[in-house]
Image (cartoon, rainbow, N blue to C red; front, side, top):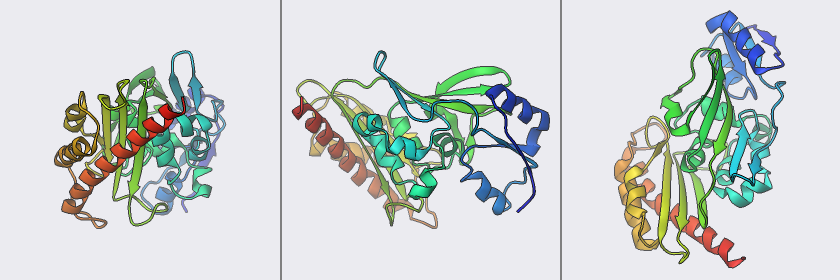
Length: 296
């Protein structure tokens, strides 16, 4: 492996200063599961790795009951998210996703921020967060800025980070009452491989537990970047959630997808499975709402 200097800043500003002074010869590293692999495969050749592990920040997801928002530091590991009771109970779509990222050993090290900035279309962490309307906070040489996570992804391996900027936090806005959610990583195996598709659905219902108030449908590996099926969401709004409407929403989402042939799957099959899985995850989200309401 190429030799590099390992630098350990104690604050975000110090990390940014280190990066700016060294330019393209530097890379940030947190868990390291992606960047070290790229170095071994000779895809990148940094002279300096700037560690973000020792910067003081929350080490687990934090729910604020006063405003209903969920805060996840970018350096929080997938395992911390997976084992969070708050995530398991309130955000099952996120739990569905992170529990199947790699192995337990990888999840103990890999961070949610690293999963997002790697910006691969198959990033399991991105799809549920997009379905939850998450936004991200970014710190850099010019200060702080915030943006919707959906707009953060620019293309395969490309995200909206300027030179020296660090993704610092993911914020999930308050959920509407009677909300349920579900995610499925679809592939040949449940874990330890990239998915053929990732499908996440979030549904919010009226008091009758039938009529849709709001729907979010997010897809991974269905376009060059994680995407939302906007037309399918609009179709469900105001309609009863049942097998027929979910099946039609799945067909619309399949038409919206921009799937392509690859070594891991052909486009026509992926498009068909978008329809199937949107319906299936919609049904699971509905079941979760009903289960939660039955316990009240």
